[in-house]
Each structure stands twice: as C-alpha cells, then as structure tokens.
Length: 158
Image: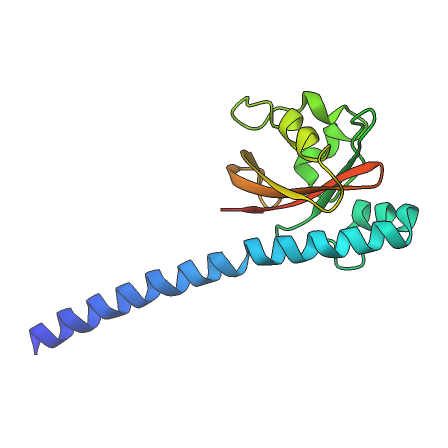
C-alpha cells in the first residue's frame, strides 16, 4: 500500500512537470512557425510595403503570434521600423548595424549583413534577445532576408 502511494505520487509529480513544460512551449513559437511568418512578410511587403510595415508595427494581420513577430530595417541606412516587441521600442529609428544583443554581441551588424545577400536567400542569425513576455534575455534564432530595399526577419526563442 505504501509502495503504491509513493509510486503514484512520483508519477503525478512527473506528469505535472511534463505538462508545465508543454504549457511553457505553447507560449513560444517554433522555428517552422517563424519561417512561415517570414514567408508571409515577404508576400505582404511585395504586395504593399506601406501597408505591410503598418501591420508589422502593430502586430496586425497575424504579424504577432505569441513570441513571434517580424522586424524590418532599411537596407540602405539600417534604420529600424517599428515592430511589436515592447522591449525594443527604444530601437525604432536607430541604425540596425549598431544594435547589441543582451550579452553585448553586435547582432545588428550580423542581421544587416544577412539582409545584404541576394533577394530570396534566407540566413539564420543566432543571438540572445529579450523575450516580449517578460523582458528576460533568452537565446534566439532569426531568419533574415532581403525584400527589395528592406531587410526583414522573424525569430524564435529557443
């Protein structure tokens, strides 16, 4: 009887730990979802750049999904357009090439360089950035591509 009670308690504890991990994962986007969002950004920008940037700025038209959101900057001067991560509002209007990540890495230059490649080529850039949910730093990978005169990306937190 005591052995059954101990085993049951252990199983319930393990089940609780597993389900809380699933709940945490449900709050985060995946690599495949980030890549799919970038594909939608490409289509939207090519169709109507001004409308797409306005939607990206507000997270409208599906451009904000949990912790997934697009970001764009000019390929000429690196100026960053608004996007819906509250931890990044101070970056809007700044030069992408000067942006440092949460540990001081010059990730902005890497993102900018990735967007200088031929249109249609997608690069991956890894860095540490601030989660939109709580502002805490976490490892992140962004898919980045050139769309005309813009560099745009969508990243997922690992």
